[in-house]
Image 1 (cartoon, rainbow, N blue to C red):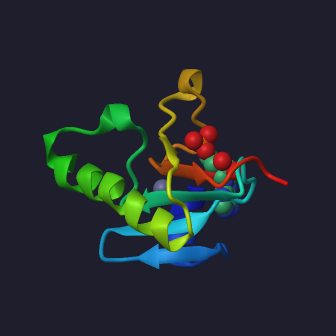
Image 2 (image 1 turned 180 degrees about the horizontal axis):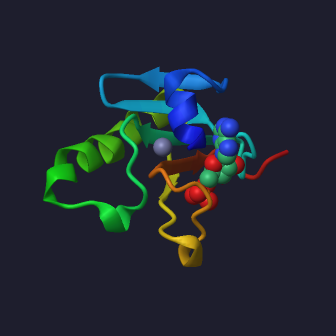
Length: 105
Ligand code: AMP
Ligand code: ZN
């Protein structure tokens, strides 16, 4: 899994945050001036495979978004999580997109 490889440091990424459970890095194909991903270190395929044991992790992902967005200079932003191919998911390791700052120049 490509995101597991980024977590392990085997593939480079422009990281902006790391703690015991999460990392965040800039999206390689940004869809906005600021576009980063908040990713759990644990491999979880989709939001659909989450259950009550993931409540804290999912809460931490969401609550990290405004903190990192502010550090990136954003006042407002958009969060997106794609679920399954039908929902636009390409990487099957859950991640929260955070986008803001207007369209890519
Ligand atoms: P999704 O469609 O929600 O699965 O989004 C996957 C996202 O991961 C896309 O926006 C990709 O541009 C991004 N992505 C894929 N590979 C990398 C990578 N090596 N480093 C950073 N972002 C990546
Ligand atoms: Zn993974």
